[in-house]
Image 1 (cartoon, rainbow, N blue to C red):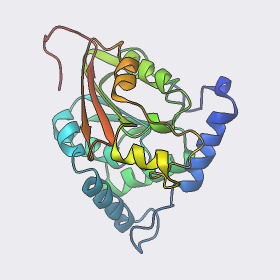
Image 2 (image 1 turned 90 degrees about the vertical axis):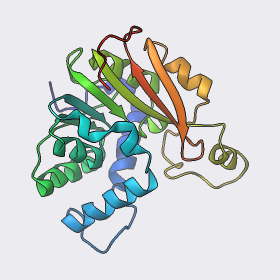
Image 3 (image 1 turned 120 degrees about the horizontal axis):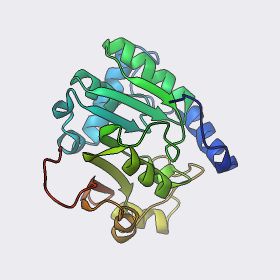
Length: 237
């Protein structure tokens, strides 16, 4: 695999997305602790898992010990660290170099290991069927090529593996608020921002033979659990 970005054909929109997240990596002040310190990461993790309380039950971090897992759009590494703590063989990719620098620091603070690579999620630098779990949480709404990301998630997922993907629901209170006012959801000013209906999201996931969709955060988050195979077999997760 390679750590360099592998999607020059995506052009300026991809560069804009990368620049946006590099600039916004420290944009939410959660504590007085300096960026990269243990207190800084503790505040970030506390904020994330309080705001997204459903995430722990959906991902079940502890069950992925000794499995190969990929966090697509790992950001500062909050989920990645949890997976690594559980004993997973974890890898994280992100378009933003600034985010990856934070993730690297967080892994060091927690004394756990994970592979990090800067890459376009629609051009993953991994072989087919490399992972038992693929997470894509809060990335699709901000990506120039969400369908490409879904296709890549499926490609690198093993036959008995599980992919968990999250999109934003246009048919929700938050979606309606964005449609009728100047109020934007968090990072709604990003260079690429989109919402999906449940039907649109399900259609994007059609290559997965088995998939379930449900909503969280009062309908704002569309959460999909996807598997390649239609039979029950011995699927993980």
